[in-house]
Image (cartoon, rainbow, N blue to C red; front, side, top):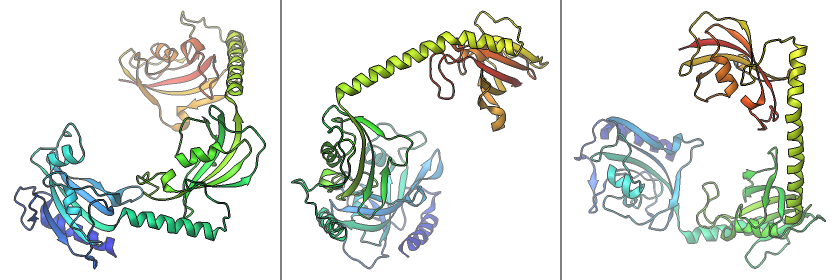
Length: 436
């Protein structure tokens, strides 16, 4: 009901205030001693108003002129997902500060406030430069609907109430530590104990007391890996993890003082306890991890050396099997014309559109613009594609088709591109669609 009324008031105000008439004479608006122009629409039944330091929650839209045209710059209801503005209200910091207007609104009230563009940009937003298209003599209209406000003391009290209810409802018998952190084991492991410098592999999930999940790695393809001792989350999370070992599964119930404190994080509100569910998959001491990394590097280097050594042999076999007799160019590129084009010549500096299918020597297709039904477009000779492409496409005319056999030294060299292993000779069937 409140939000529908807010929208109705907003539409009426936009029409009456006039998005097209930003004058310094604001008929229908009152003015505070500090210079803030305002209109208040008493839509709530409450008379209490916020004070400095309260945590305020409100819907907001603001608009003004940009490059001479009326524009809406921000609307909480149009965010994805819609989300009101929330923050601890500071004291007004300058004449005409919007914060003075927010202090006028009781819960359920709506108001329109007019703020000078330069004051907003340089004093509120603390920008160092006025955005292009914004004139210093312009004003911004703020439409605010107050949803709620709370004192910090009431938020702290509410956190205690919610936390105690959660402990009782879930029949938790474990006692918190001196800082208020609960550590509840759901499985005991027997592996290496976590200590500073250990390399830890784990999954974890953060939930609110309501059960809402705000972050989780459990559904991701790979777990989190980190060197313990380097902060990756909250203090409570770090302390809880320090008590675990490989194979442990545990739940941490973390009060806001050890979590996101009075600041919150945008999803977790200020003074809100959180829950961590943790699964320690692997723990290696610093020495063991460094040894493992060294062995992996040696193994990878051995594999890379093998791929590099075998590339010419595999390429020669491909050429022989496919009866390709053209000689390589000095770069190593094999250019095999299929259809000679009759259109404009592709030259460095020109824009070209190319359809292609890319394959490994074993015939596996790793990419195709034909499947996407969208040719690639790029400027030739500017390094926007691999060297083999810049060279090969420059030998074609519009309408032409060719096969480019590109050795790794003018393709991706020793880089592992996922679907393309290091030191891979690539085969591209290409069609030069357009030259311009």
